[in-house]
Length: 423
Image 1 (tube, rainbow, N blue to C red):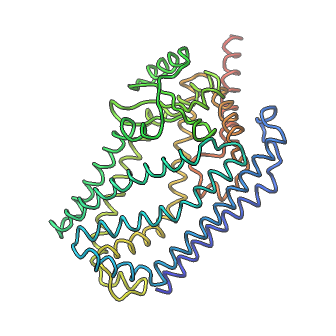
Image 2: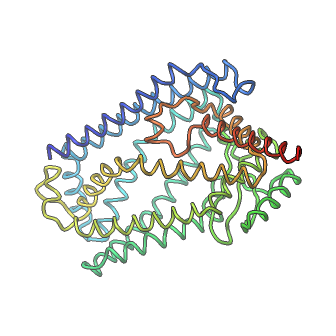
């Protein structure tokens, strides 16, 4: 137990150190206008951006501290053992007890996160002009998302535990198939059933833009069912665009704030970047990689859940199957922490490749660069992340690096055209 506790505190301390380094780096360099951003971002915007990032970072530190204190008390302070015995007395059946056990944990975590979500939305986001939602809409979103989570988790838990009870020696394969098929089904279902519960989707209002997007998609060879605009401005003034769904329900979604802030060429370049992820196989690789990792996790869980020494890692003499799953999940979380840099590196590599693809497809790398600059300015993004923090956590390369690379590409294209013209 002692070494697990020490190991946990060590990883927690390192996470705090990375956040502290990121904050210090921002305090030292936050007032510097990066190359390529001159004229687009002034000192006042940089000051607001630095203040916003610092506020979010400090809030994140307090939230992380509170969450880990609760986790410490639950795992190492006897909370898990008490909860395990209470559920066993309340619902003694295997499937019924498991559903109550895991739904109880999920709902408890949801309730504990409520104050932090409320503070971030109605204090931090409001202070910096991003919040557009009302308390009523926020509560409606919370209730709908909680209900959806309960239905999905409850259904998957019933099915998984039934498979485990029916095949004690081979359940790991059946549960893996269940999780994989459910994940694919949700990706297919989300655009047509879940997302419309929260947002209003409509065809892009700027007809010339919609036609340009459809033409861009034809050049990529991607079959997109619809090009939609979403009323994201009802909740937030942040901007974004994304692809959603798979197969025949694959669609492009633009935030209405993005349509207002960027010109057509910039939007096309950003969508070309997203299309690059599909054409370069990034989505397929992530799905396949996730499925293979899930298979390894299911088989490893099958082996470790039967190990008699598992409860002793947290100082427990005995634990139910459900409590063992919690212990194993905690250990997996510790192990996954050290895989974070590798996962972030692969993601950044894919993002660079998608940028290169967009530069070629749109034939306008400068438009993608200017679009990224506007998004960074309007969203008050951190232009000066600490290199170690960025290498460890960031799924995208720092935007300053992306803009510089796109600028170099644009410069190379201009030089190439001049040479051809000269000849």
